[in-house]
Length: 146
Image (tube, rainbow, N blue to C red; front, side, top):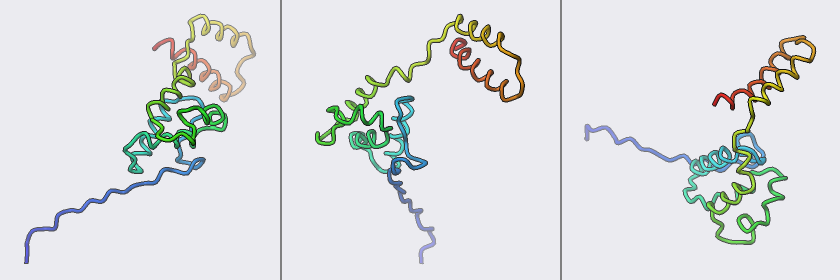
């Protein structure tokens, strides 16, 4: 009878790629491309997909109808073209949507104009209006500070 404890066993749990349109599925609507690709890649890793080229069909599947209509028949995404490359599909998406990931280019004058226009309006009536103003203000001010 052996006195050594059994070696721990590990098993890899593979989670299938989420069904498009479900809560945990990645979704690309033309904004935040880098975030979409990062989440898509992580889902692929969780599903045991180590070859990024195999994620290309998912890029299309997880896109909005508007994005699908735009990219569906480009050579990088066309379902009839075999051996699609992740790097080429990513480059095509960057070409079409890369600017959407760029920080907005607000100016100090735009912030001043916003403040002047808002001060010309009636005073705040409730907390909801104050919060809405604050969100709009931050949208302009934070990129200027950075």
